[in-house]
Length: 350
Ligand code: HEM
Image (cartoon, rainbow, N blue to C red; front, side, top):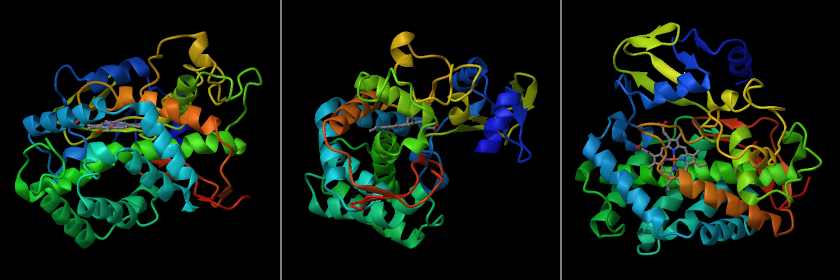
């Protein structure tokens, strides 16, 4: 990640040895992701059961379902549930955050209606997704995943998640588990960072004394947390048709990569780029072009608006309670498809 960052500071567009075209110029990155001419494949990993993209109407129906389920939720109440759950946890921080965010999403995911679906999701988080998120086992057991997908499919057939779109029965359970990862994966990573930014000061290069984390509006703390520690740290799209990307040619089969983490720390676009400074969001209202934690264009996050309000409320609820007893267990952040905080244990002080 550091190497990528250094290259991005030197060059706004370049090709990696592996053949990806990296675009760190915000204006060009937006044009690339909006993709008015349809050069790229925008179906996110969520909607690719078995690696194959679902047809566009199924993706659209799933996005509408997610959106409708979120619209019925109160971000402040959901944040309070998540913060209380994590504060009551012991052990691995990532695991605690995954379960806390899932607890906050019990209703939208249908877990309040079907105990067996609840147990299936708990096993999925513990035995499959936790390892994928932290990188602690890169090839989770496929047989376990398929068994859990089968159980989730049976629960959906019993009506556990009302309104869940009518995708093919053989992939329904898998698509549901992928929807679970959309609801909880990046949010849980953002929760790990929100906790660490309050307590683990060495993660932050420096703080502006005039803007301590407690004094800033919670939503600005959330935006600044997403700027420095974006859970989706790069946006990748496969190229469907040859086309130009700035000075380079992207060929069918290449990948175009927007390195969000590097862009959101780039000294050309952010004064004091490495400083955690929630106050910057009140000094220049509006979202700068170089801020795109939720991607843009087709395939962009349908939960973005909710997430910013939720994460702001998380900052508020964390500020209102004593710090968690937290011991750091690794020096470096966990970098997989998701970028999350270094390993910590809750319940033990350093
Ligand atoms: C910090 C939290 C979050 C981040 C950083 C994030 C980021 C993203 C990104 C970057 C994408 C595009 C995927 C791609 O490029 O392939 C995406 C898509 C998506 N996100 Fe999020 N997300 C977050 C929270 C949520 C939440 C809370 C929900 C819903 C409950 C959600 C639902 C989705 C869905 C359904 C898509 C697929 C959209 C589509 O197919 O067009 N996300 N998210």
